[in-house]
Structure formats: C-alpha cells, structure tokens
Length: 366
Image 1 (cartoon, rainbow, N blue to C red):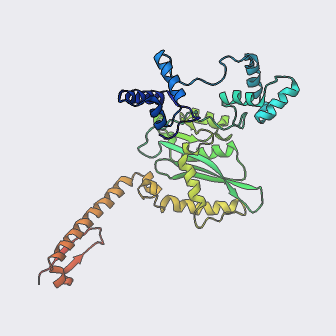
Image 2 (image 1 turned 120 degrees about the horizontal axis):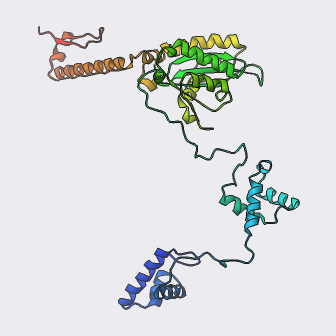
Image 3 (image 1 turned 90 degrees about the vertical axis):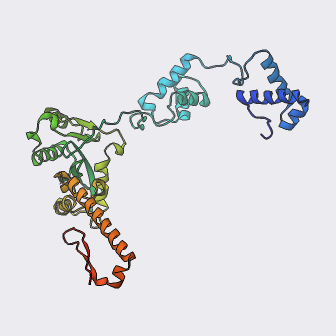
C-alpha cells in the first residue's frame, strides 16, 4: 500500500483500513502496531473510528468554510458571464477581461475567480463567431444506398496558379455509391451561379428529372456560402431533392468528395500549378476520363466508377470470385497429380488453358 501521509484517502479505502484494524484487533494485534505496519498515523485512524462509531460519513469534505463571508455575490457572477459572452470581448483572455472590467467599473473580481466562473460555463476556450464547434452538432442522416443516383456529394477545391494569391477553383459533383464524377468545371471564381450550372448539368447528364420525386438523389455538401445560397436551396427544394449539410469543420461528414480531391491532387501526373483555366480544363478532361473509365477504385471492389455506375459491379466481382475458385480447383488438381509423381515423370502432359478464363487440367496417358 505504501505510506499514507499527507494524502487524501477516499471513503472506500477508509472503510477497508478500518476493517483491517478490526480484524487485526481480533487476532491480538494492537492498533498501534497495525498502524505502523500500514504506515499510517494512528490519530487519523482514531478520527475515522470515532466518525464510524457515531454513524457519520467518512467522505472527505471540501477544505475551508462552507459559507465564507467573502464569497462572490450572485450579481458579480452574472456580470462576469455577461461580459465574457459579449462579442466585443470574445478575444480577451480571462486576465485581460478582468483588467478591462476593473477599468470600466463593471466588476471587481480577482483573476482566479473570473477564471473559475468562466471554466464552469466552458468559456475558457475560443469564444465568439470564430469559436470551434462544441461537438454537439448533429451529423447529416445518411440513409442506406444500394445503387447509383441515390446520393450525390459535391464540393469546391482550390487550384494553385503561377501567381501568388490567385487561384482557380475546381467544382466537382460525384455519385457516392459508384464514386463516378458526374460533372465538373473549372472557374476563376467561387459563386453560386457556377454551382448551379454544375448541378443542372449533372441532372441533365443522369436524366434525373425523368425520375419520380421519391427516386431522386439526396445531395450532401458542406456549409460554404455557395452551398447555402438561396438559389441553390430553392433549386433543391423545387426539385424535391433533400440537401444535407455537413457539420462545421467536420470533413468526415462529406468524406467521399474530400477523399477524391486528395486522389486528384496526389496523382503522379498532377501539375501542381496551372497557367490558366484552359490548361486546367484540358488536364482535368483527360484525368476524369481516365478516372471514370480506367481507374480500379479500391472502395468499390476494384471496378471502375463507370462500371459500378452502370450496375456491373456485382457481376464483375462474381466472375472474379468464380475464376479464383476454378483456379484453386486447378491448383489442387495439379498439386495432387504432382504428389502422385505423374507430372514428374511426364511434365509435357499438363495442359492448362486460361485464355477464356476457364481452367482445365488434363493428363494424357502415354
């Protein structure tokens, strides 16, 4: 246990120590000797025994008087909280806030008291409009999707140019199920007009307006001003397409498009900077053709986004599994015959045909 000196002992531990004392006393060991063995002062044990005998609680009380005469008034506490919550004082630390209040004659409270009041209300971190989100915001409710065009996600990303401070912007709309890039465009500006063009072209390409309202995809985006613009919201409301907003500073709420931006910018052939919009359009036209039709995507069982979008994923994966199964049977047959020394004596008798994705093994006897 170690020496119990100058340290707080919780209620349960006190009860355990007193139980040990009582048992030791029954066995003829004095309390003084038991205290020496446990390395605890006898007067503490006597105080605990006295409380236990009187039926009093062994819980530790907070040190100091229960109702100190110099305790803060409720009006002072309210004044501290009111000032701390004002936007113009949001950037001040608790010390600067306290000194400012002294000079303005708002309240006269010590630094430590102001800190404790602010800590009790979780105001010691960033306050005001630039504060971090509190972790209690609700993530978008994502229903289960089983095929393409049930959920879209879109976002905008910076593209570096050769002039410092001047950027191009890549708008990208993708299908979450198939990971296909449905529509994209490059612009010098971030505007809701460009975003509307992106969405409208995607609707036309996928013939979404021919679907019934309950079959149209929901759309996930973050909370940028382009996404929250009235014309974008009104467009989705008119089309009966639910618009889901990601939480502030929470990229995991819209992970697929964020991941795709990373894939785009980590590509070996990515130029990192663009001379102008025409150069960027030329590059991304080639890149997204490759991405949609040739890129084997790890998130969709290594089929291309185009194949997954067209509903071919399950058949391709099933065919691969069947070929693997057949090859495993072939391997077992070859190894079994090899163990029987048939192939060792006549190695030319093995005929394996995989050209048509059919595995055959025939052993021709001489």
